[in-house]
Image (tube, rainbow, N blue to C red):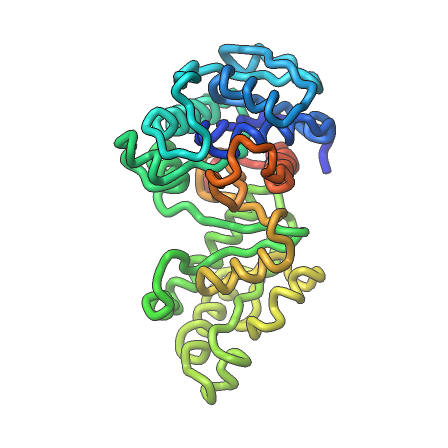
Length: 337
């Protein structure tokens, strides 16, 4: 890995959730500062309270822009938006002020990235109900980032223990997802996945496409999707110059990728890839949003309102999220290929 340390923005997340806590715990890990220059975008009062909750020896350095950061272990540089009434903050409850604040942290982080003041975003959990209470017109991070960055149809990639997984379809019923498994879509996504890995600086890009049916259909014995659409789509992508094989039976393709046979797998539907990643290591499964004009990594869990403010939440996922941003940031190319 390159020794270049880039500035990573960490929007603090919903103040009533575990975001501030896991950020504080993560930044108490010296390894983070050895890899990057983290800047928290949030509310200084909330973050100081989180530091006290997790009982870490950290000091807050309030700054107005990333260039003012000290980036010293033991001191957390915080861009303070000062947008929470700390006396009214209740952990674990849906609050409009928290939904609005979480949105403002993300919006500010995006602006910093667009202005090249930070190289990447490592995002913490936000809450859909809190956003709704604040009348923020987005249901989640992806939709928010898509609009704020003026980008269409961002591409999600999971990474866990070196295994990368892309998704041909995501939030659809299985029936509707199968209808989307056309040769044209398979070809398009393999091309997009290849470009995404290029932007992350990945030199070797051998893809495997997961099969849909048992044993990838056994030549039509167990279904014709592989014969009629998925296989031909892979052939079209190969003709385009993409290094891709498949469909490879889903009961083995992820294991093979985890052991280095493939550089990435194109999962055909949501649970196929999610189960593979999270069974490998739930806490270290990190999401990367490709197709944005900046790098964005994210934890793959929610605000955990039931344990917020109790110093129970694990910071493993957040630490991995920041580390992955730090790993890819020096190699990431902003230009759309």
